[in-house]
Length: 193
Image (cartoon, rainbow, N blue to C red):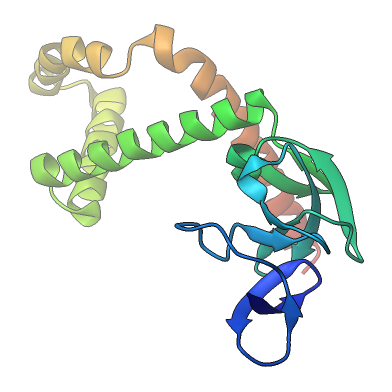
């Protein structure tokens, strides 16, 4: 069999021209096949690769090509490749676990967002509910009408269950620090106008 090559990549089979590569294995696509100069190689069987960074991602080679980096890893781990400060490496177990957790959290937040829309309405409705609570708190703080006090007494148990301090304490402390930093940067920007 003859093929058109780009370094060790088999681009296509051909009848005329190209390079004689031998008989390719059946049921394996060109994306996994390489030609090392004498044999066809299924890169899924390798435990080390020459990795080339291209604009469309990483390309695995069985031979050294210009601009490639030699790395040892299983073919199944190729999705863990990252470019870090100009160096190729595999993601750590901690990075992979953090990404999986982030995906799960995003899914939960999306589920919550959809549930809140079902229960409370769209973002505008939810903002109006929040504004109503804030205004009620302002009125209560200044005038302490009995009806508003009774209303707050009635909903306090729900609020405690909605936002348990054990879960929200560290989140709120961190958020307060982040908000302070962001607002200080904003105020400094205003002063420099």
